[in-house]
Length: 218
Ligand code: HEM
Image (cartoon, rainbow, N blue to C red; front, top):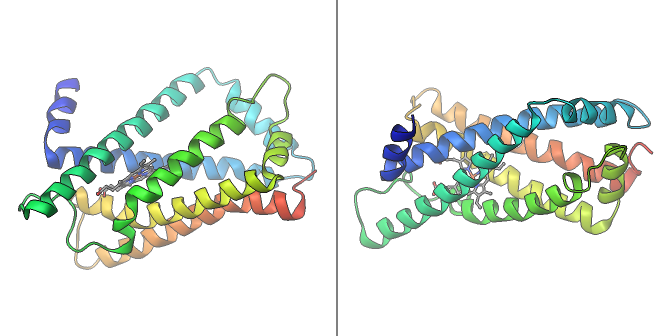
């Protein structure tokens, strides 16, 4: 497994394949994360969300999942930096080994920018909701406190716009990278990718908008 990984990561196409796989795993995580967060809307006092957060916290497998997630993020970012540099060099030199697909679209051209905005958002997000988490602290209260501030809500919404743009291009691009390509289904996959990006971005953005404008479920 390790030797397969190092062999794959050393070729240009291999890097792109690993970037696509790590990206798809991150999308999977986002879907589960959003579904779990919806418990915030389940009742008026945030008890369902607190219960959900406590259940997650008491799971002994949580540290393993968190390390896995960290590895996925670090690998995805490192590979994205390498692949972007590779594509830039290939464009400059006119090589035939370009690893991006055909013409650059606004979605593909802004992947590094939206990725960097997501990265900044992640640091703020973890500082708000992971580092401040402590025994007996209500997670629903913490969410209301952080997202009730203009800066907290603003950073969250900007991060989610970047996420929507990133995923809208990324999902269908990852399918192409993995060779999942069909004249009939590829246009459908492109539409699905757009919908997925918008649903994830908008879905997560409802939390700051709800808390900031409507006061949350206090
Ligand atoms: C939850 C967060 C993220 C998800 C779900 C995600 C997902 C993806 C996926 C599925 C791809 C498509 C891979 C392909 O074209 O085969 C991709 C590409 C890319 N990602 Fe991410 N990503 C995330 C965060 C980031 C971050 C934090 C960065 C950088 C700091 C980043 C930078 C990039 C770049 C530059 C590409 C395109 C590289 C290229 O093809 O030229 N991503 N992402």
